[in-house]
Image 1 (cartoon, rainbow, N blue to C red):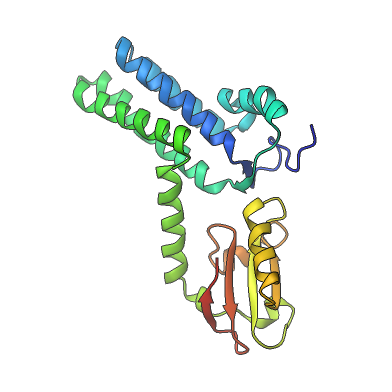
Image 2 (cartoon, one colour):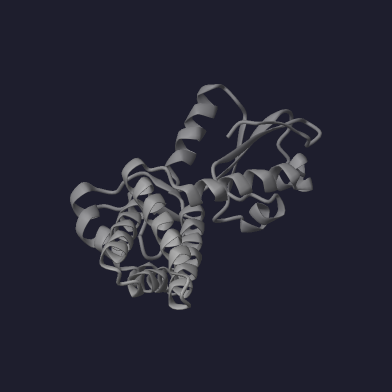
Length: 229
């Protein structure tokens, strides 16, 4: 199977279906823990998330199962920015760890409530694709962008000195949605300047780009006049 992105090396992006497979495993196992009363499963799930986040996707069992067993049969799905599902995993690890500690300390009602919350949100993400943690990350990224002084203006020298009104599109070459946005902007006849955040992480940091695609209309004086994506 031809892959646009190596799942273990191109960590900026991820197959959109992979996090859903991981969420399905977490949701089912968290429910098993509740039904059987064997709360250490919650701790093991938290540990697995931490290991995957710190050491890499090769150590995430559900991820490996998807990339090695499912993806070769279904093909590579749309690629997306990996930061939002990563943030969701961080949230899941924190809540599952808290649930485990609470049950171990004798606060079983609190612990199981947190465990069931993770199970419900994980299964919701697996079934519908709506990831609560991802949406929290995206909302935070947008709020940071709105309040980020540099994102109100772009230095024209950072975009090659392009003249006149342009659209600056912060993108990633492996991001499926980025390619869709670029095609739409070009079809509208806009003058487009693309900034590859993989090649120019300095500009991504300078302008507080928390997620791609991000596209803004820039006036001749560098002032941002509209957000397009």
